[in-house]
Image 1 (cartoon, one colour):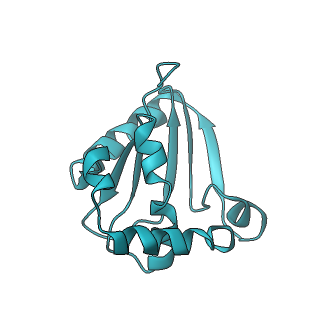
Image 2 (tube, one colour):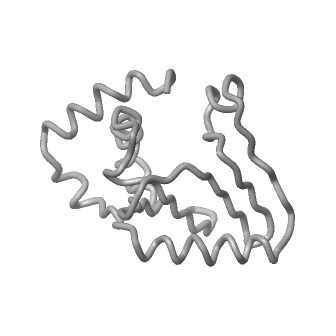
Length: 130
């Protein structure tokens, strides 16, 4: 990253109740991977909670997605907290979850099948309604 930021994203893998959402989301992975952002897919089960940790000092946790639909239409909530102890705990949990996740690599990602790429491209058009 240009400014020295280390960005890691953990998303659910194949175990999800929203496959179209997963495919739409995956359409953006190549752009993220090219920019040095690490993307991991969690393998054991579904995920719904959202967490954001910034500089080991500020955290946001909750169930709302970070998109316009969730923030404007859905009755979900995130809470922002400035507390280094909480950020450390959340980061420890995040790092533990990464042990059960598969890291996506750019070269392997680019070699996925034409079918997968087409499916992701198709579902990306519906991203705004998810």
